[in-house]
Image (cartoon, rainbow, N blue to C red; front, side, top):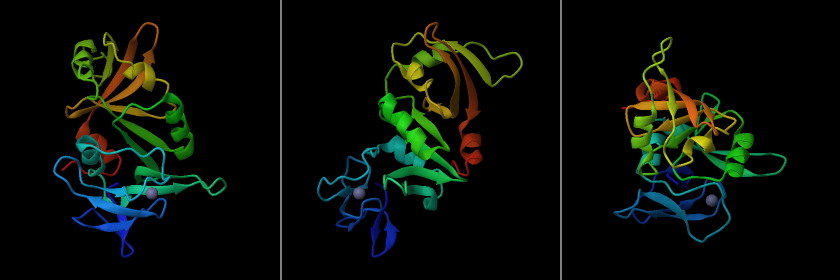
Length: 210
Ligand SMILES: [Zn+2]
């Protein structure tokens, strides 16, 4: 996590720092090594948010496009007491930044829990997806130059999997464009995406790209 409570305030990790988890209230320690993104870790492996995952550079970069006060927001279901940490909550929308592949049933659970949410997917997790996507997209649609039809030749299931989402899905293949997945037919492997300049996309949702 990027934040823990230190003396009652949300604080970023610092060398030798200790704090309290914003979600479960247990002790945390700052991890400020040379290899991983600086983060807070639970002192003991207690039950916290089972949906939480370690953040790499890509994840943290996306998070930092948004204001500090909208990062790592705790959501609680008052009936079941279930708690989760949303990456971003801004303008009544949860933004889940997804670097690691997750199971489809967990993705559906998250969608149901947060309800008003969107996904940002790391399209560079599988080394050939970015190249295959570039080769797959056809020429611009005649009516709307931002719409692109494509036929997926890649072996990964990135489109098949995320086409089942009940919430908007945006894929970042590492360029200055974010691709919204609009349609994908699992049988024919044909799909439709919309190109959105990354800067525009971030601004839409209340963030800043620089
Ligand atoms: Zn915790």
